[in-house]
Length: 264
Image 1: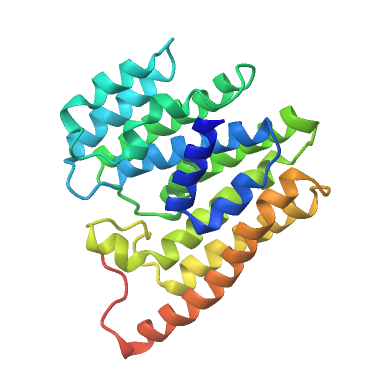
Image 2: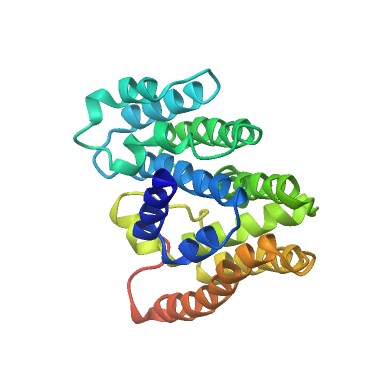
């Protein structure tokens, strides 16, 4: 219980959007979802790190991916991170602890998702996160968010038998990730990253997000009352609000009130 309480405190430190949904899930789903959020955040902190070289990001992300496919111990992660202890945040350094959270019968499914995600992130980091086309954007949003919702769909089924449309689940993940890309453009540009396809403006990315939000709405609508619906409802509502607000702001800039536009 002490580890779970500590884990919840870390979730709260990182996210107001996901804190409520995560801690609101009943046991033992709570332990599995908390682990999933923290593993996602842990590898995301490597991917997004402002001072790590792309080569180091690749080594660390591939290392995490490999370890999650083995009979790892907490000390294995300590060995992987030993040269970057002063650089990496605690949420990343504590990956080995987070893996102890889920029940043994579902833990391997959680590890599988983040082993794959870490290796895909390593590929994106090595390529400088190059997004040129809508297809590239599909690949990226699937890799870092769509696969997460596929995991969540499996967790719903494991916990209480809830069944979902997995295609709509991918849309839910893509929707939330594309909204993040839309609203985080300036922040991403400041660290030299651009997830917008060539030639796309705010209207294009907003249209992409809205298309995926339509699928996300259908994913939510098909869920009966229970932990899965409660978990998914608030983040989706926030995404709808954010895309409306952000698209208005960015359209204003692209109409000539700011020299922004596509940074490519």
